[in-house]
Amino acid sequence: MDELAERFEEHRAHLRAVAHRMLGSAAAADDAVQETWLRLSRTDPGPIEDLRAWLTTVLARICLNVLRTRSRRGEEPLTEHLPDPVVEPAADPERAAVLADSVGLALLVVLDTLTPAERLSFVLHDMFGFRFQEIAPLLGRSLPATRQLASRARRRVRDTTRPPDPDLSRQRAAVDAFLAAARGGDFGALVGVLHPDVLLRADAGPGPLVVVRGAAAVAGQALRFADPAQRGIPVLVNGRAGLLTAVAGRPVSVMAFTVARDRIVAIDLLADPARLARLDLPAPTPPRVEVDTSTNGERAAR
Image (cartoon, rainbow, N blue to C red; front, side, top):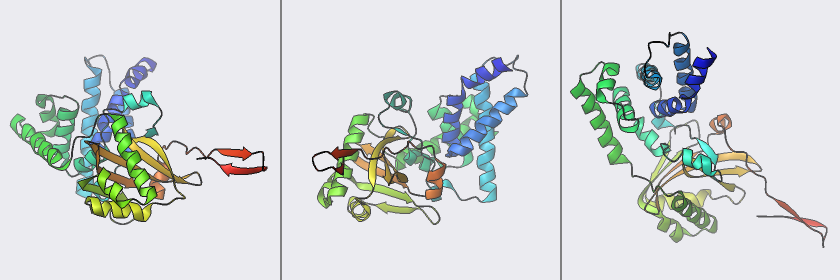
């Protein structure tokens, strides 16, 4: 069993990536991965030729059942609330490299508008290279029908998202310019760093998702909510430039930015205290305090 557990752990990161794209929730993804392990632990691994493929297939069936159950129960879709972000310290180059191919929150929102079958076919084929011959039996569909499902999903993704700049430093430069303009109250500079059709989605908890579109409208919101008491901490959100804001060391929001051609095309803001409390967030570093020995006083450093 120890050897089997070790073999499973070699594939855990891959399985979690698949589950997160399928389910859009970190907690649900972890549950699906754990269920996959339980099924493996009750199976004779001897006949399994390709453990990674076997595990992914089992996980896909679990995720598909979860998505179908959500639909049958009429559960509130994640499009009514933002998916769980994956937040990492911005100054960790190794983690930045690991997360470089992560799916941004904007794409996760789009994936949640797909049917369970469309989502599974698109995620497995377009994101993880599974063949349609392998996907069709999972869905109980013919090969042409499975291809059509992925094609419909692909069109939806293409029509509603823009490919982000892959250069993290360029993403960060746009986010820093946005933050500086908001803090400085510079409406013109804010509009300049935003794409004309920029989309802001704000999730503050109970109640519907707030959606604002257009550079002028989003800039106005940024100026309205810019709070000098909030401290902005650069982070990676799903592998992209983001911002964790805190007041007195307590996280109050996470912002994910999608940057394309040096302009911000989407902002996803999570400010739900209950969900923030459940996330594994980097600890906000308190401001450094300098002691002015000449006056025996203190002043907070930037």
